Length: 463
Image 1 (cartoon, rainbow, N blue to C red):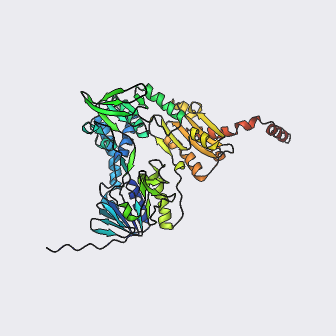
Image 2: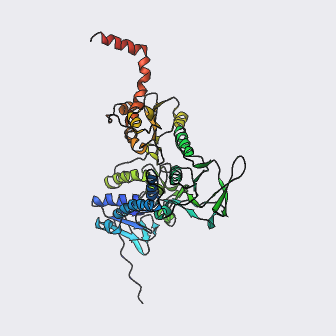
Image 3: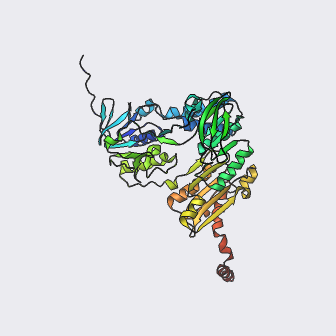
């Protein structure tokens, strides 16, 4: 039987490897400008449903009761909306060529999928990340869940053990505990180690009041089967300790999903942090860029959501040849717990170590009219500046912190000083006014300066 003819090579302007959220967003935006785009995906178009499912579960815990059916329906409604925007039919209708299969670099200018060659002018690696394997002896035979498993959740785990003290682990542990599950949170590196210590202390107090069992600074040594499901043996300064539960929910670190790409054949450097990129998201092969969670090098310190920003930057450089520069410090970091924690820039501890003399501006929500009216006064706004008022960082703890951080994001990205935030026309009696109050406090020391008081007294003589 004659061998089938080899398909003709594709020659698009842009080939995007990975049809997750970031890859799809870049493909849609580029195609809207009339740019030929090929999108390669070996798995599910739209990527993992885990992050959105986790976000929906946390949101449900703020208002819904512990009804598994209602929780499942709430998660499915959120996922259905996302899936509707990411169908292959819709992407094809937008002019995007979809190729299914494993992409492999076969040269610096060619990617091969099965027998199909793609010779694009530019390639973008957007394969994301996946949970890193848990190196815990005995765990391979025990019930382990991850974020993706939440998408199909039809029954609440009775006694979940959440492993991971980052933002996802803390928020999910609190949500499950609020649903009535006897939840244990294990945070080997501590609770939210990358966030402001004062903010973390406030959240820790809330979690403790709500009855969440928290183990910080204890790493799992081994896992064992027990009558209730599983048992984890933890290390610690005072000796071993054990916790038991029905399921283990793994919310640990992620690792870049770059296996199988044959990056070396494409002349693309990579390491444990991902595909090595410079501040312009370009790899060692100038035809290739990487974005989002699979990008390492200069992008390794970026928060998980940085891919949203990377899409806009890559559009500017790929379509308009504009120079771009990523700035991981100016990316917001959000913890969807209750209260929420939102931060951008340096923490107070980092600022003291790097910038020397700093100013810490703080305004509690207990002094904010909107917070008083709602009865939710726990939390604060904190801004860190240098002596001249340059904003080094900000953190907000409280209801809607993820939305309230927006003015600080704009100010830091635009290089504005604290005076710009102090002069913002914010809604009267709104929670956002706490940011303006904190910024205005930068000028409080001026009121006690004798020279300034003499100047005001002099001007008063003229009416």
